Image (cartoon, rainbow, N blue to C red; front, side, top):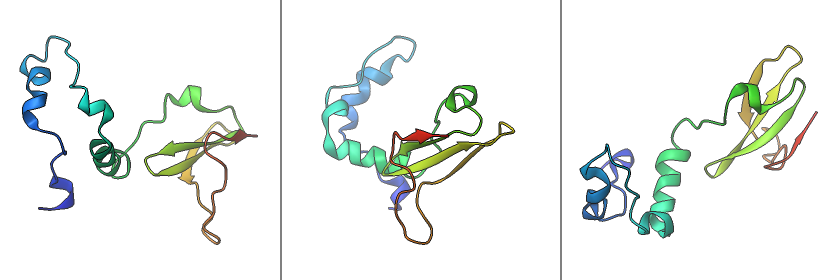
Length: 108
């Protein structure tokens, strides 16, 4: 089975009450919030392998700002230039392979 088709490590029967009537709010089973195996699966399949929303562009940074944001196992360096254009980069120096800005760090 290809990596992308690997099922989540949770018994599908546990999800039945949550999926039975999508018009009614119903929480996921407790194991979905506490399972380290399920969290590792989500990190691989959602955060490391797909797009991640960082927030509304107007709320991210002022002009000239920069900010490091955790995305899965890695991080993204978000910058806004003087014209207001947002740019995102892997938060890793291509030459040395070290982190450019600590996650949660910001500056101008």
